[in-house]
Amino acid sequence: MDRPIRNYNDRDANYYMHQIPIGILDKLSEEERENIKSVINTAIPRPAPKLIDLRFIIDLVFARYFVVLLIGRDIRKQQRQYQVNGITKIANIIVAILLIIAMSLLISSVTILIVYLVKSSLGIDIMPGHITNVLFPKK
Image (cartoon, rainbow, N blue to C red; front, side):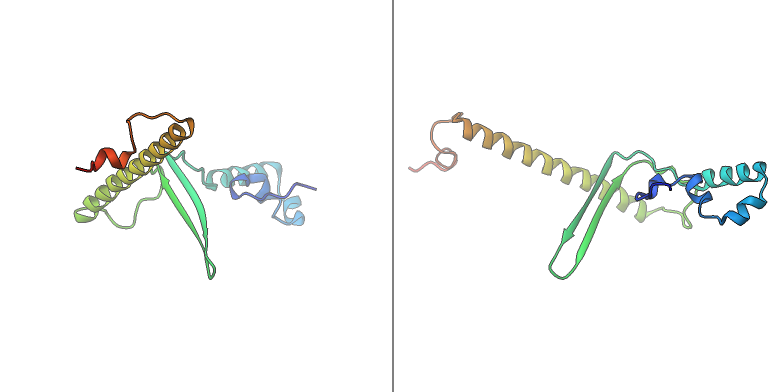
């Protein structure tokens, strides 16, 4: 018995050929089987590499949501049913730039926080006194 396939991306032509009833497969010649496998292989989508592949689940008391952010080149063979132009194209560029800036700020702030916590736990003082005393000196 074949092992169960749990991931959609693990499915190949053999997986789909096993879904065809044996009586029908027995009626096919070897050449016909190979042609069917070839068609199935070309029909199976191949995932493109992503620059950012962020997937996580948010569990709330009343609902469960999943969030997926994928950024990468669009190498699909299908064309869009509509042409993206004008204000939509500009809006897409602006949103992409804002996403990149937001992620950069998030990564930078987390990095600074981690460095500050490590510095504090090691007892390293860069400036004398507390940061609030330096920023807001009492007169």
